[in-house]
Length: 336
Image (cartoon, rainbow, N blue to C red; front, side, top):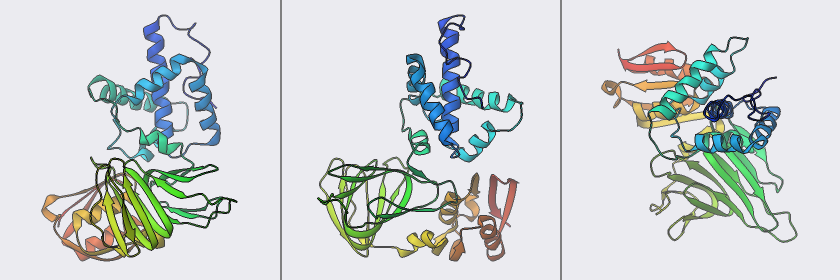
């Protein structure tokens, strides 16, 4: 199996000049970036990426430079990028077109500084899920976690601390008493701060908004929320709160409908159509757009997440809307 950079990983002797060599290494770095975004990374590919990265300081420089570029695929589902890159057969034109898009948008004209690199961090996390997938895992200490759609977590257990790093998405956690001789506290780390449970079952959702806000719901027990730059706040069972790096909102009654995903359901109670579609879009690959003319229509009901196309058909029957499907990955909802 060939991997990005195979033709340049033996050194720079084959390069005619430094500029050309740097260009080829940056291209290899971009290919690795897209593979890591794909959500289909094999253990062999992870090892190959590590080997490529460590093969030369110039590879590391190219990778670091790529991470200083604004994410040009923030509006493109990673599943599509990965599928395009992994097109079978000898035809590499699709790969070259994709890489050309990265060069033109990411390097040639964006001008953005360093941004979050959560895509490749999430792709290489300990536990991940794809769009529309959920996954349940029991950790070595007995703690049970369930990852929601398009989510990623890392687990770090030391002699003094148990830490779950939420890279992206959402996770439901049921903590267990520590089996170690000396009990270690359990902590959830997010981009905006920490969540410390006190014998509890709770969910944590990391939003990709400007504030990197986090929503925490407590089903059992209690938790303490601690933003990076302010004092913490205790949240008890039956409550929820949202926080960012600077503050925690006042607790409100938990919206139990928000945890229905653990049962494979999406529940709407007098919800605007555009808000409902934004939530539904988390569970399907591609773009799901809503015409402003129908955005304020009201949706109520319980919908199974196993088939989002079926959910859209049910909406079309219940509301004065039409579904326009350009491809499976580009759907627009408009007035009928």
